[in-house]
Image (cartoon, one colour):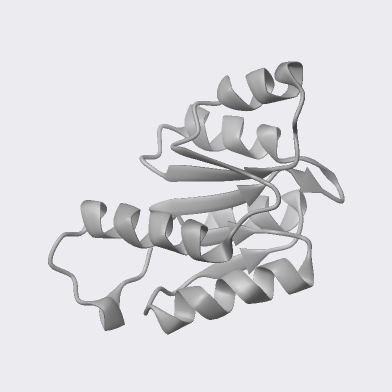
Length: 128
């Protein structure tokens, strides 16, 4: 799974929980790093924070969607106004998490999504 998050504390909290539950992830802290990761591999799941230092994560979501990849996308956003939320929803995320988030809720979604994409895979071998 690809986790795109520029906040070190947030990335660490989610990353620690993912590892605890046996999910392997790669982290990108910017659109540039995420684009580099996507040029190397296609994750089954991407968790994308929209507020990144070098741009809006919506562009990354559009890139993933236009590539035809079957990547399931979870979005983390602090957007609260209707116009911003409409722009996010237009990208067709598979899950939408509004800040402040509960890291455990996000990790539960990731685990369920991975399990649906690879049923029967034991927790210690889950990678996405």
